[in-house]
Length: 476
Image (cartoon, rainbow, N blue to C red; front, side, top):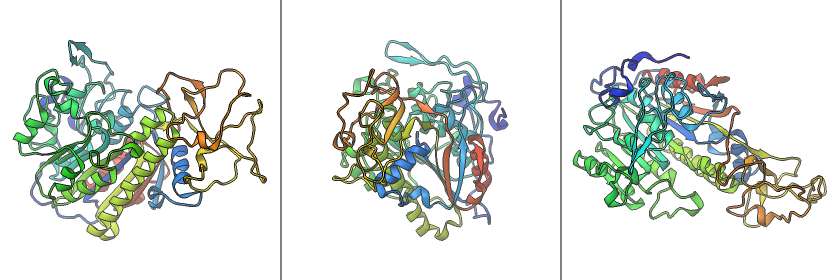
């Protein structure tokens, strides 16, 4: 496994003092013909091919298109990690962000870094990291070139996927340390982000920035939001405050939930903005940098719904993720007609075990009166409900592993389209797991790309290769 040597000398023990070794920022960076000045990387967490296909049918029918389907270039991505056939989000996103294969659980470190869970001392998680070295991320390389950089997610901003963009840790559960990596000049700050740090961070996770006596989880007593405000950062805590952020060069952090967002269909739009809204505001702010920008946008709750084996929620989250892609395409085409200086890449970090059972007639999109892909399998050409060997109906969608498995014969199963299309119906699984513990799948994932150098993305490529192609496309 190859290791990017730009920061190989920066050991984990000295991460707080790890400075970027990339080229120094030097004023305005002129647009270079053939290079992408702006890069937007979309990550649908857990969005395997079956999830993407089912979401398409759910939202627009079999013949319809989601935003990701309109991206003109495409590839399949291999997602195995350094130590596992099936990756977790930390290892896969870190591979995208650094070009280095990681062990499961590791956040943007060298491939020899062992994933060691922290211990607990009172209310505090204590790192046991003493191995490996930090490797540069795309965000760090962008900041070193004088570009703006930001992170947008529907999970906690300290969760594995966003963390891999801006932090380095031997274990993804070191969320308080990960939060501290964002605070310029503070203890634990990731100096590889430059003196000023990221330009914006939008998502959930306020509890990781707030001390215990203020209702948060920080046992060190630090109020990171207060520290950021003292350094000139603007802070938003609801949708109105997000929308009020002026598109200027002043950094901003918006934390709209103590931990993760609620699912899209249950989200309070007054408190928690849509992923598309956060994406739009992020572009408005970052596009003011004359040197261009790097933006990472994660639809993180796709994965949460699939772990819970509630397919309807997963499909709704996938639709919301695609709405954010469409928002970015629309806004960037106005700012940069034809995306001549902008690269947009959309993919997933790993698959899940969602299944699409055949041979049902085409259902079209799901509506209040049509269960669509969420409904029961029927026969052709009569449309009668198809029965299994035990004489019971079964759904189009299912899972390889999940909490809902019928014990013994299914002959007494009572199932209808209305039940199967319920908001929180858990589709049946082949292998039973504990509640909420559906598992990742190991299949390749889809990648779509548009704009400057999008044609580089083709064929079947490793997730580390995606880093190389983005780096090359943007001249980082």
